[in-house]
Image (tube, rainbow, N blue to C red; front, side, top):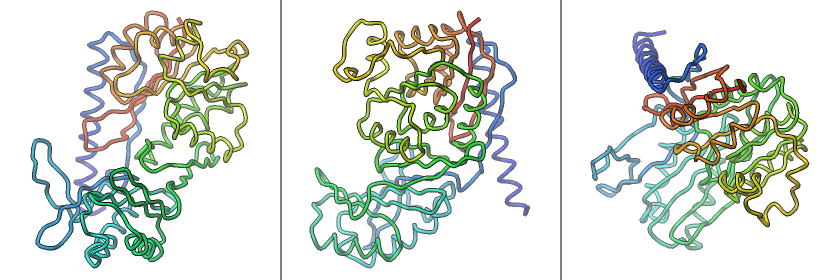
Length: 364
């Protein structure tokens, strides 16, 4: 390891230690007793599988650019060190093609990259103009030249030249899982740390029984690996795109014991408490499930009061959080009936203040 690499690694470990210290302090101040915290680090660079760039036009040339908080004028960037190797390889090549073509560059204002560990790349070019047949012909040549997938977007227009997705492959406990990842929908950005999260979740629930209910299942990222430990799984997700992706992923991974209900967590709580009937549950018999475990991976706002109460009715709770502040607030209520038996911090977003973490709780 050369001096520069050593310094990067030292700086990375320091920022990770700062996150750990903050997380522990936050939980202590909230009165949450944690077991030994398991720490899962990331590669310092090259870890991010997706990226969004502004395109800045200056002196007749287009450039990748980003905005600093509070500043209107963007700054030009040449590379993206935290991005995957494939993103960094493609960035100068694609921009060179853009600058060699008035058709590609005219009123282009943003570019989005979505890549996989298996070498697939989907690039979305976003414009302040309508895209015509000439644009499509040039974009198809770009797609062919670099063996990528290209999408063009403008106001009320989406031009898909081949596919609007990539297929990622992740390995958990020596088994490979295939995931359809659709453009403009949420996917975990750090594939390496995502595999660590999936493995940790499996280790928490490996000795489970009965049925699992999962809220906020997305494209089935966790569902696909956890389903093997339960008789049946009922998962909820509000996004139609994510529901379709999840069902595709279950079929691709030969998982046949999962049912998805297109409901929000609040709606599912109302349905389970028999407070309200939903047409979307017409073909699902809630009484046929014997739930003993619940898995939640909520947005930054955490669990609402109704869902918070729902999780405490389960014997086992697995909670993945992207916001330690709301996690701490939820745990103040949940730990009145449950105790934390496993806790982990996942450095999903190095060099930022964001903290991804997980807790596994059992009824007292």
